[in-house]
Image 1 (cartoon, rainbow, N blue to C red):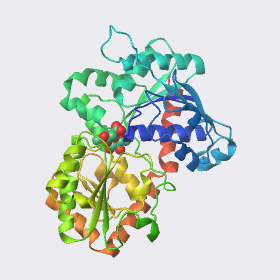
Image 2: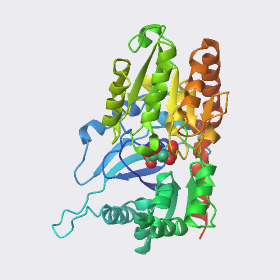
Image 3: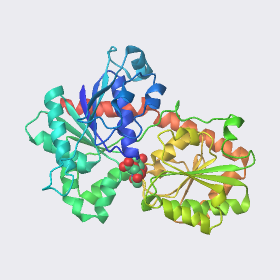
Image 4: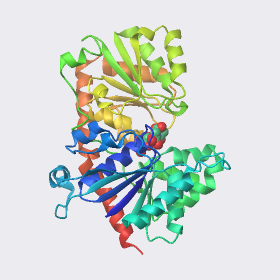
Length: 417
Ligand code: GMT
């Protein structure tokens, strides 16, 4: 297949899913064109090395002007990594990156990226004989892909709903009609959890089939690191390591994570890593001061190599107000880390209560604190929950389980007239 994947480049689960999908599809022998305003956050030299793919990424720079560059040509050897997924004989695939540029014309005060993205997609379709465009996020990406299709081009549009594209509509009526149209007019629609699929039907008032395809995780990349010397870089042996990773938007409730951690500190020695950038970061730094825990909390910038921190953590806190799936929780689970999270959105489809983590009402800090202490104060329990978390991630959410679901959707959609 010749597939174009349109996604957000910034740090966030949807861009991660789109990037990993693009890598895997190219590894499986497809010709993949990744389209975004910048090179997606997790598409790094390091990731390509992990997959055994040599690339010309470095020479492309961060923003290849004009936007066309081949990232790699997958060899038969690299394809072998995904061999479990292959039904057809091996052939080499490729991954290309195309940067969508915004129109820089004085008349327009806004960047008009949805229109330039539609234009880029239309050009790609003609140039590379694209069969299918996979838009990650209904707005603006599905809208851009549908506009390209409206130009009379023979493509199918598959849209994956990731969360805020649907939940935002409840709060932001300005997007309602556009999102509804994007979902109705896509040739196929997927959502990353049952909860999100249901919410899409209710919020958008659409009846159509929405296939649930969960996020996935590479368990070779995300795994526990039991080396005491490595752990010692982060904490003393008797200190627990608590992690919060997010984009520090209000929906993530990072202040709750800090408050839970302050409670943990009253009971045991611990350190917290707050990883990510976003609007509430400064407020979090101020709250850590106010709670007099600043010396125990380290704020780190968002990093594409998050596995390095997850591999030594004892607990991940996900106190989100809304979480359609919770990719960060899955990555922690694969790393052998139990999760304490809000009982919202798709998180109950991922976390098994009392087995791989705990789910508590959103905003209930005492309940989250009690659940955290139950994990951290009992070494054997923490270890058992971490092992169960990793086992669950591998059994249900490894690439070999999830990726074929996307391939099935593509094949079915292409067969349909
Ligand atoms: O969580 C974010 O703020 C980032 C957001 C995104 O759009 O990149 O993540 C959403 O998509 C992820 C991948 O499907 C999901 O795992 C996240 O749960 C979802 N975030 C929310 O629903 C808030």
